[in-house]
Length: 197
Image 1 (cartoon, rainbow, N blue to C red):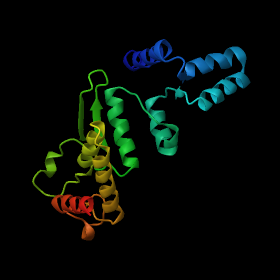
Image 2: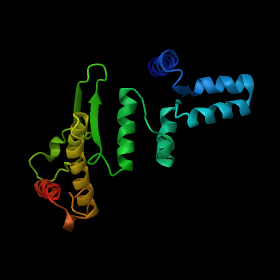
Image 3: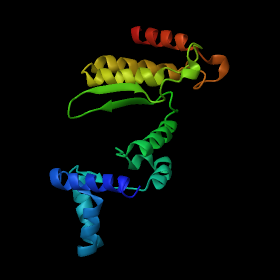
Image 4: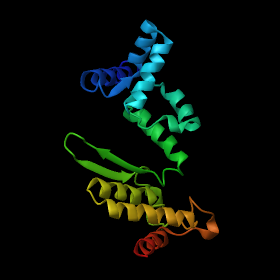
């Protein structure tokens, strides 16, 4: 792990210093300033960077991140990680907002512009044909795709309908109690009606 994930961390900091040094403040640079010039100077540099809207980049050990993300999610805007830890962490973060059934997913290649948008939870084959799966993750992934394609108004209509349905406590059984739960098709029809209203 120290070779692979440590290498990923090292590469990330090298990239920052080579290409984005004037727009990003990495913590190793701040630690060096603190060591050489003292705490007061380091705090001043940090405050100036924040005032200028610079991106503050730090690294954290994965198990510590789990705890910090649960206790202080507002401390993290973007998380860059390798695949396995990313899978665990994205599931934990999805739980913060209602679970895998709600969290949308995307994979974007920023070099080619190619993108795939998919449900975070995967295909859920155990629910196939039962009309009980929560389609919100896939629907919100579709909204992200529309936004990516420049169809912002359509994306907003979808997100608004999903928010309305959940606020009305009209959703699938993983989100609302059994008596009020809708089937997948009923939920989909409700979203269509909310979009058209």
